[in-house]
Structures are given as C-alpha cells and as structure tokens.
Image (cartoon, rainbow, N blue to C red; front, side, top):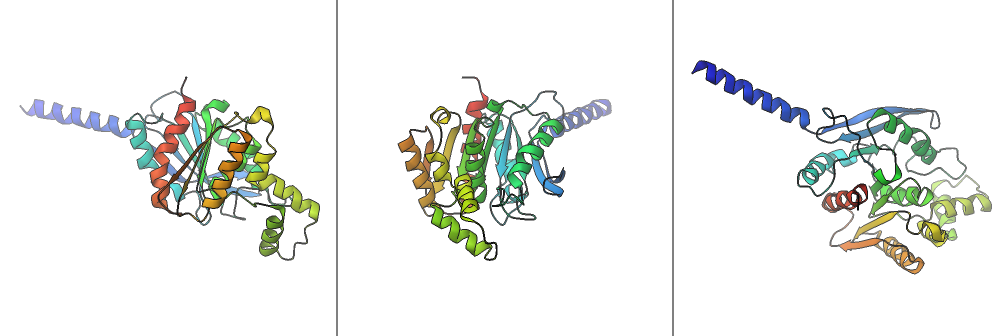
Length: 290
C-alpha cells in the first residue's frame, strides 16, 4: 500500500511538472542594445505554452502599448498572458510569440522625429526585429508576422504596416491615434510640442506625409491595397473615434479591404482586453494555410 501511495505521488508530481513545463512564460524587463538610440531598450515577451520543451518555430505578433505605458502595459493591464493562454487553449488562435517593446523612454512614440535625430522606427526595424527574431524561435516570413497596438500603439500599427507592407501579414490598430489630419494640424502640433524648433516647411511636410495615416492611405500604390489584412477597432465613446472613422472612409474610397468594428466603450483597458481575443483570432487566420 505504501509503495502504491509513493508511486501515485510520484506520478502526480511528474504530471504536475509536465504541466508546469508546458505553461506559457512572460518576461517583462528584458533589454536589447541599440546603437541607433544609443541606449539599452527594454521589451517584454510572451512565450506560448510548450515553447521551452518544443523545437518548433512560432509566428510573431508585435504588440504596441499606448502613451503613458511602457513594455509592461499589455502584461500588467492588458492581461496578455491570461487572454492569450485562453485563446490558444480554446483553439480560437494559433500559438504565437508576442513581443512588446518600450516606446516611452527617451522620447515617447514609435516614429522617427522630424529631423531624424531620434529614430525609434529605424530602431524597431533595423535592431529590435532582427534581434528578437534571431534570439527566439520565430518564423521570419511575412505571412507569420503581425502588428497590433492600442492608442499611440495603434498609430504605430498603422504607420509600420503602411510603411512596410512587405513585412506584415496583418495589422490590428485598436483605438488608434491616426496622426495629423492635415498639414496645418502638423504645424500646430509641432509648434505646441517644440516651440523653439523652427522647423522648415519642407521638414514639416515630409513629417506629415510620413506620419499621417490618411495621407499614407491616400498615396498608397494600387499594388499594395491587398498587401496587409486590416482589422480596425474603436469604441463609440472614444475621443479618437473620428480619426478612425475617417480612415475607414478613406479605405473604402480607395477600395482597400479591411474590417472596421465599432463597439460600445471608450478609451479604456476594459475595452482593449475585450478586443484582444478577436485580434489574436484575426491574425491567426493569416498564419494558417487557407
């Protein structure tokens, strides 16, 4: 009887250890060295269940935080580990690696600044992406890479996929900041943020063309209209509702396929936590073989 009890306990421990080894992992204080930004840059990463015990490579989602948060935002407030685990367990999304970079240190935002003195976007594509895709078992083909984000990170999702449609299969901006609506808006915005900068008209116009989602859509070449699968989501009480609606209308006029969803809610984590499972399911459709 004692031997049987010991064997039962050993079996339970083995099962428990196996389950523990199969659980997902989140690390939220990792760093990547950046020559472009002249600093070590922080990032968080979600590794799906089974990553540590398997040999397979995984699709990747770059998940961008909003203004005022950092790389821990989606981990702490967005509950990314719980939501992703549940989506994968229920078969609503395919297991993937989720990378969450910090864009709140040094200067806030995902863009290069007007004079390219602070080059966050260059860091993202030239340093962060190559680093994580060499460090972790990540599939590096376009079809297995997606970008999503909320608010400021939604704006980053828009511009990154519009600047580099050859790199992303799907883009999912949530409650997105869509950048300046017009050139005059850009001038006013830059005047408020850096009143002593004395930017030239040429510098302001170049920045506007690079950062305005509406302008990027307006100038999109016809052969790029179906390059990225778009899922755009914003709450009906969100202060960024107008910009997202105008982007939807511009995409309709340009005949760019996209999903546009308006749900009840505002600019809140409650809204974004509710949106994340749909995002994971949407991008998984591209990861699968049709």
